[in-house]
Length: 124
Length: 124
DNA sequence: GTCCATTTGTCCGTATGTATA
DNA sequence: GTATACATACGGACAAATGGA
Image (cartoon, rainbow over all chains, first blue to last red; front, side, top):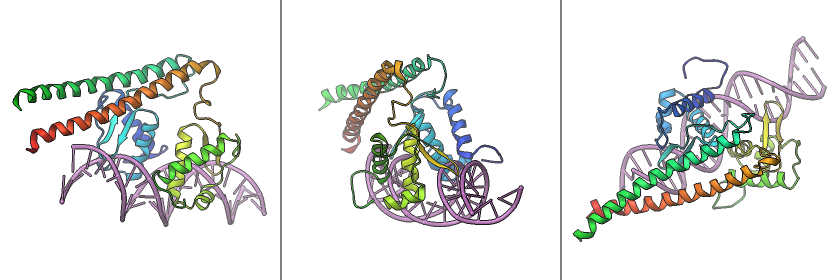
C-alpha cells in the first residue's frame, strides 16, 4: 500500500475499489481480482483484502461466492446518511438497478441454453 | 461453542447476541462483554468474536469504540434506520430482497443447466 | 500529568473446509 | 482429479483510545 498515513490500508483499498466500481473500470457483473491477486496488487496481507471486501459487501456493492469470486452488484453505495429524503428513493433505484442487471444476464444465459437445446433437438 | 454443526460459529454467536439484544437482556445503551470475555463465554477464538461483532455492526445493532467497548444501538436491524414514515420504504426493500433471493435461486438452477449442457457437449 | 490496565483497531500469517472451474 | 477461490477458524503482534490509580 506504499506510504500513506492517516487512514488504514483497508479503508484506502475499499475506497479505491469503490472508485473503480463507480466509474465503470469494474463494470456491474464483472469479477473482481481474486484475493491473492489483490494481495499482490496492493501489497497487503490477506487480512486487509478481506476487510476491504467485507466493507464493500456490507454496502451492497459486491457479492462473494465460494469457489467463484467476488462480483460487482451495483455502482452506487448506500452511504446511508444522505440527509435528503430522496435517499430512500435512490436506495430503491439502486436495488432495482442491480435486479435489472442480473435479469439481463440471466436472460442472456437462458437464451444460450435455449439455442443449444434447439441445436441438439434435431441431431439426437 | 460446544458441539454444533450446520452453521458457522460466528453466525450462531451473532444470532445469540441478536436475540439478547432483541429481548432486552442487552438493553439499548448497555455495554457488551469485552472481546476477551466473549471469547471465554462462547469458547471461541478472537476471530469468531470479531466476525460476530462485525456482523452486528454492519446491521447497525451495535457500535464499537476503541478503548471503551461495544454498545447496543438498537434492538432491531431494520427498525433503527427507518424511522416512522418510511415504513413504506422498508416494505419495498423487503420485497426487493425477496426478489434478489429468487434471482439467486434462478442463478443456481441455470448454472446447473449450463453444467449439464457442457457435460453433454464435451463429455461424450 | 504520568503510569498502567483494559479494550478495540489494525495487521500479519496459517490451516482446513467447501464450492467452483 | 486437480487447481482455483472464497469461507471459516485459529492465533499473535503492535497501535491507539480510554479510564482509573
